Image 1: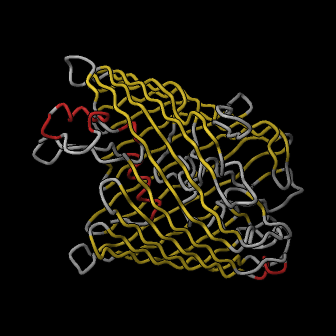
Image 2: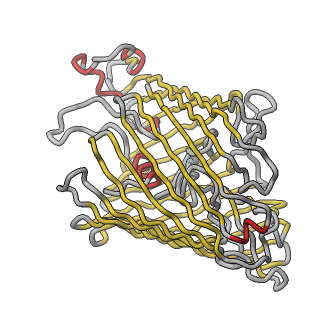
Image 3: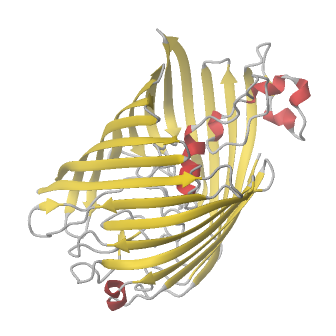
Length: 462
């Protein structure tokens, strides 16, 4: 099985929680990554109400057991320790702090067709001296949408309207952004038609921009928009194939070599699957468009692949990750080649934030072990280079390391990563991640130094 953290997140983000057992007998839903996908109507059966507060997980509102109200919450606490912000080039001291996130939600189902979902978020970062826009949000609406499902021809038509989260595939480029403290939401209209192995999606959104001046002050507007169409088929050989076109617009965008109103046309294709112990997930994206008087021409790709010995001791998996993204090779030619990673997944490389999906080539072999069904261990070594030395080294998400653009030395550095994920109970999970990044000469000449990160996390879901 694929066990990189990014794969695990994407799988839970896409798959509905709480499916029935193989014999179709009803069972309690699992606490999912997307809480709005959980179906608690099974608790209409008194025999399944086995936990305290089940009376709040399923509040019947009529004779139809599929008409009900369900309440829930998530709590995540993570201690982080990092001795380098921007590899130490920004002159910041070592940091030790906690990021804390509480989410509460109410899910109203009016039969099998109508859903009203609302979720509040409160996030704090006690002990963190230099806050970023994704660290703190005292209280705001994370999601608030209406969904409607209707049968149509031989398929199903689904609509969602309102503030919502969305992620595609491994969430390399369009993500819920669960790694940082504040998740990414979109004020969006979403429609999908599903029939047989096909799914067609269309959406238009204004991504939510986070503020922390007062409660309920997050906002979206027409200065930042994202929308597109996507086609998926899930039985193409031993895998699934998807492709989409989207358009990203941002007014007053800033890059190292270009500023102005950004208009990007985006083309993406992905093929993922598995066969006889092998697994793979390959994605490629091209970007064209305009920013002020410059033409945009950028690209990126990503691949996760591996082989699992499922019958062997601890079910070892050997994996290989290979990624790349373009940088601007000539700041004076009127073409901006710096890739825009859009709404990236902070988990995809490591949690440390030392790497942005911009101007880089990344090779990462790994080994994953399962000493227990509930415990996953990952050890990996990653090596990174700049795609072009004319552009900078970037940290997460798109922050250039000062003093690296236009300097010699394509080698960025090598890091080691260890991560343990433990599903302690059906409600509680924990994780530990440690990263050591040994920098290359380009960063060292810019005043950087080797960097260490430690994250210890516990999550509770009800």
